[in-house]
Image (cartoon, rainbow over all chains, first blue to last red; front, side, top):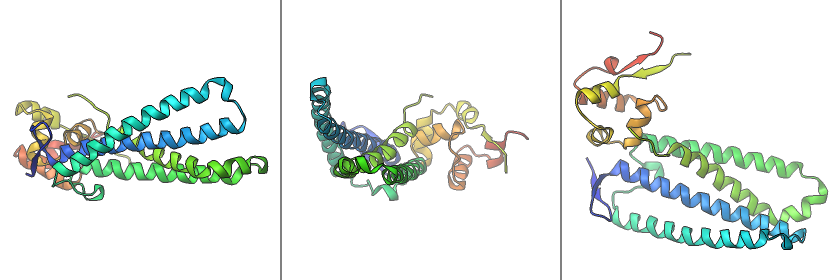
Length: 160
Length: 69
């Protein structure tokens, strides 16, 4: 069986590495989705001039923290990619459960995309101007969160 | 079709003194695959079912069965 060494030189199987890679990727997607959502909320808050509520400061702090953690995750995914020459594209993963999780993630992301598109369609005219500015960010946030949350739930740790 | 699939993988593992990771490494899947198959959260392909059966030197029917049978 194809086995590779990770950064700590511990030998692990390729399916196990695919599992770890998928989990990191989902976590990164979750953070990116959260960033898009916060960006949209930030702009909506600014639109209604609610900056005195302290929400903006909190959002800025969370935003910066998310960006720093995203940087760490991107770096670890790049290192994984460099170290694990056997690691393929996600759709070519050898592990059956990982493939199942990817498929489920895509299904939920599609459902979320359709849902939010339908909500945008139903938005009253009064809010269209405000939403049109934030629509791409909200749409991307829902797609990212729709993929990442079910994926992370399905990949959660369990013990024997 | 309204049948629930159950399995004896945990019993076979325990009999052969294997951990989930040992079995996963032996048949080339992740530990999570074994764990979710054992708990019935994931139905494996015929390839995985046959690989597990081959590893335990038994047939698939001894490992997987319908709960209502």
